[in-house]
Length: 390
Length: 145
Image 1 (cartoon, each protein chain N blue to C red):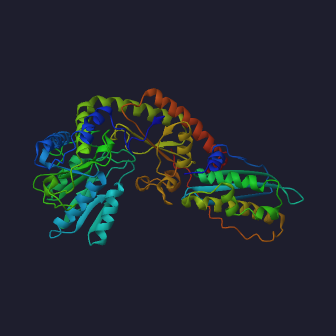
Image 2 (spheres, chains in turn green, orange):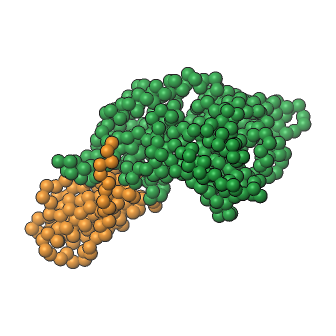
């Protein structure tokens, strides 16, 4: 099997698993308890909190463990809207955010918030000028993702954070795809809140963080016990937290070499596809993109059929076609960068891991060439295109 | 997600291609929604469908439904072909996931569209055939990449 869907989820690394295992059967005490037996769990949670903080230049007490990226996004937006209601009700976000942000914004609109969804250019970048123009006296929050999950484009987060702070506005970023993959510094980038998820960086599923800058007055989202400094109740998911911390530490230590390696293999993939498969385009920015992300559109064919044929030869990938989204519309991200519907239906996302080799990629491209040809020979759109060209 | 029959017909589609100077050809679907089906028929003097070919832009279910529909109408009379409804295609494929059922409907419409074209060329009326909903939108060509 060649697994190229690492933006969807990753394999828990052996080092992370080994770090987690003792906390299932041996060190199972509730870290909130008073006896010595619970102490080891508590120390492990504290150490993990520091590891999670170190990756983004935060203080450990600014890290709150959650049930994952979607919970973190929900918490940040809903709690900010509540806490700053007396200041205003206007939120600025973008059209290419993850649904954890977009659907939360739609929910807040029903409660009376007003949301500006910024357009993006053909590479998927927001315009800083448009952002400045969108700011109103009652704007309470700007939430822009660090990097897009589909097309991999990295947003100008530091500049967005600076604009937010110059205007006294809270800045949240959904960094689920970026945390552990590209350098992030909450101080330099003026980030007030940041969401991340463990399973996107070879950690376990069901664990995430919300970074909340000291002094940001948002309240609890899950009410109950006094865990996470009374801001996120629920018995600590000790094994998950330990796994998250270890994954963050490894990601920090290996980022430079891993990025260089993944970028080289990604560029080989992009170069081969664009030069060897006609009527293909790269979605997302050519260079300001996640090191492990490649996203293409192949004209005249539909994405799901590519996925099924890839699956038959053991290649796991994903697509933004309507058939894979469960609706009639293709991905909102591909439409937002200006692709016509019929082109957006033919998208393919390949996301690498550090285990992906050049040989893997060459096999995938060789296979893709045959698959695309087969599907185009079956496509009435291609037939019309060829006839019109004659 | 898909039945073994769907996967078989998608992986090894029957009757893919074109017919030169067909008795009838019909194209249905909508590129915006991600499904376009084109069916070619060669019909002899006895009103028997001698040859049938298809081309489809769409997901696995759309390709499989087209392929199955061509098998079901090949060698049949026009009246028999009209009995190949979306339900018949659906059952022959051992079912489709709920969100994909419209693909079998598209297959029925493609047969009807091709038969309608045949009837118009021949200036005949096929009993029980209504003008198919042919909602093929203008496809955007030449985006230039």
